[in-house]
Image 1: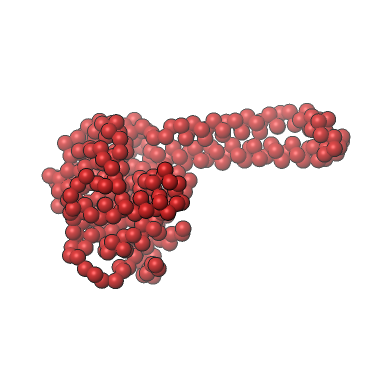
Image 2: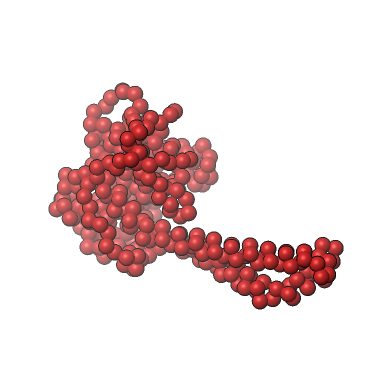
Length: 314
């Protein structure tokens, strides 16, 4: 199934609602929300320091290491030859480069988990043109509540009487998210609920806005990310998001890896005004925001056009 792309859409940005620019540094965000998956960050930092130490040892004890190679492997490294020095130098360079790459990966992981998530939440909020008319919004896979509270903050700023519901698979997470909402001063706008995202515990056409941030790719991971079964589970969640969205409502998904399949599924669901944002690197991989609108009336027209703000690649 091919995607139809307008040439002029590659150079234009869709009109979005107005949101105040984020003016918080990462320390403020971290103080409230903390960070998920600390074990991954610690793993990266541990190995970065390990390779740094290894490269430093090669630098300080270069000659002894060359002698060790010549004595231990005389068939490969002849005494006084250059092979041992080349092997020692090459190994030290690889260790140093590995440490640099691991430090970069750790920095990007931390940035993606804290500051970038807050920045992308503001962008997601900006895809909704009029928050004052929103009565009920849903955040699928709300996690720590960065996006959830950004939506609640926008409702509060516009003077809306609306509410936002955060859905997560863990009751412990939902309780923690409610605490962050109170810390942000938007507790009265937020409700959290435990539930299965593959079968949303809501009726049809309930929400004016449905959003999700870096969550959808985790659905079906027990089958493996690249399997047909995992893809079917992700498509099921996307279908559920469309089901609970009101006619004329807006859906916005920010996720990793699987954007083309999301676009195809939205086309199959007859969603309108499908837009894909420019590429943003998050957690060392490419990510995109996909926004769409549910038709005000059911129709059986052909596949809609997909507008891209920037080219994306599989």
